[in-house]
Length: 146
Image (tube, rainbow, N blue to C red):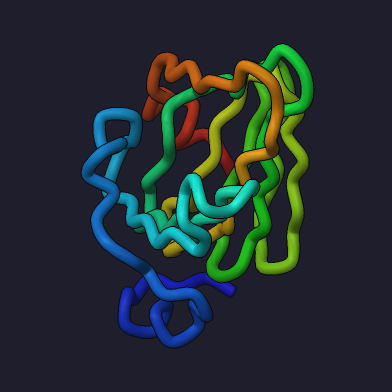
């Protein structure tokens, strides 16, 4: 279900929008919000609810790892997009689970006309790191269907 209104979206988002994602704002087009669900360093798996305002998306990026690693996205509210380099974009709705292996260049975010949240799971691995790349261009993003 699409949510253009933040107030309606907040009623549907079970985990809550969280605080402005200022630490990573440079890697997003638009505003995103972050609500950690586990405490980094105290749990072997870091989980966070990431919320995107309509039109917001993160830059292309790669989760590097010598072994293991990658990311899981568990979509919880609103509607969004996920795309791997060289492939068509995939529509995201509540209940969609995306498994992103290490070393796959990709991006994810909200549709133009809906707030969107997913739980981001950092998959444990050896020598893990994230590489942030170029933004998803407005031209490419605007070509995606509603």
